Image (cartoon, rainbow, N blue to C red; front, top):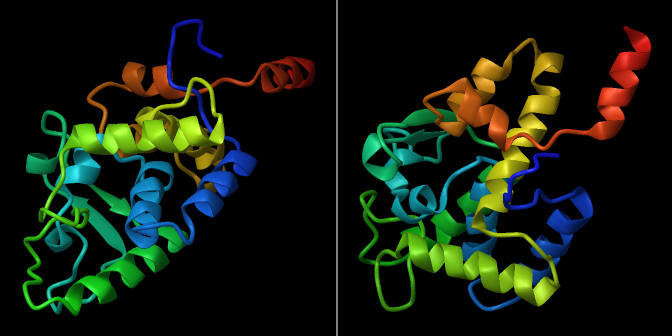
Length: 198
């Protein structure tokens, strides 16, 4: 684990706890999408707030298998194409079907909106995560916890599908591999096991 102060990663039980907490609550479908965009796509709060339907729809208006994140929605120029996780795809599809029933729906609309506005701010997304984690008693977690969890999980599994840390760097939208490495939550147990088999 890094010795610098960073948002803590989430384990599978905590991920399930957040999804259970959000299920059935007010705006549950939207909030589940927000959480899954962080944990299953590694999006920053700014990217979640600025994500438009046009970035996840195919030319025929159907839901794409990819998030095509444009530079305008990212930090710096870190636009990228992220394959859509199945669980995220299913939840976004539900939200899309609900949104398309509204007369004012447009592909240029933001995916995440409030009851009063057609978009929200990154700070509102940050505040939502803070409230959820505080309600659940998760100490040291923030809006960056999902992103760190995504990067750590991807780094641990990327070699099993023939990829490398460069692929994780791309998915995270980092300009340098060193930044990606700082996101990864290291395992003392894994370090011990690798030394034993060298």
